[in-house]
Length: 153
Image (cartoon, rainbow, N blue to C red):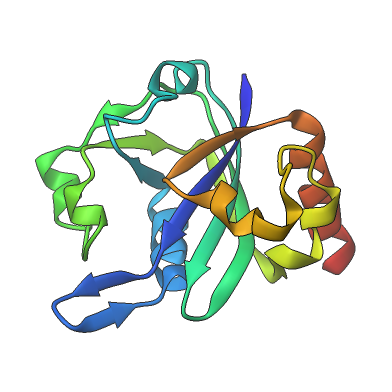
């Protein structure tokens, strides 16, 4: 079982932008997270785990929630395609099904916890550690963010 950050960014339908927070809320509601089959950590996701949900876009950079999953990544079904709206999600081919997923009532501004995260070595360029859709993190970093979220609620 691993600890992860699942990243979502603003989406676009033509020139219309869908804020990343809205995309994250829809994914939590539907209990799945989209990923690319070309992702380097695809094999590691098979063991299941816990994920922090990270949103980045025009509204800012936030940890917005958490999820738990126990199944390996699966190919997106035709039925699911109906609910997948906007670029870049329309290009993603696989998904993680959440056993549980929640959005926190108070999102955490990422820059408030960055100094405490051990996987971020270059603190001045911390935002670059959240490129891509999925990143494995140490369990202590997961707990740092989760405990911060609990203290905010």
